[in-house]
Length: 293
Image (cartoon, rainbow, N blue to C red; front, side, top):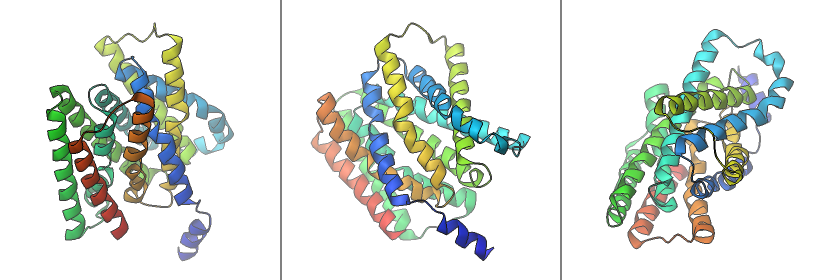
């Protein structure tokens, strides 16, 4: 067993570099969503379908690994895909209602929620100092909410949707933490993206959301969403072979900074003093937690 662990460590990719690349890639997601006028469930659905399509050649290359998959594995992949679909639908919906700064800073709570989820699922314990950082982060979220309350009720709803999207993405990562160590991360990514696309497709059909009639500009956004930000999720699935869900979630720390800077430059958005205060409080508490762990 010790030799296997050592061999895995020797083959581990440069996690720091890959997480940095994922931060850059995923910071563009909020910008692309803001550029789109399509419903959140539509842009999410086509993002997942196109991402699965891009991975199809690699799946063919890894086709021998398909034989190792069991019926239970497909159920797990489907469940993971549903949580990923929920994440995108909720988060894309939040971006339609609130600012990029608020939505992405709330996503910075992901490491905290991952910490709690890791304890519930894998019994990974945290001390009182780690718990206190979560409470500080929640205070920051409250300040962001107060700042958005002064703007409109829709902003508060958007903040809530963003928080719910965090719960969904943590569930997705927790499932992946135990699954990608048995299944190739390429196959895992492909089937999860496909399952997420199907789940969103079913929702759009039941809700009567039009799935056709989108112009070339919208399809360019769907393509960009599938190509660039989704790279981060492929990186996450790879790194779950070597590091914990909480460690992978550290990359979310850089997204609010990158996305907010891009929103100011590309979208002309502004940041209110309360949003900045709440954001710094959340990011500071998350940074403190990550340094300690």
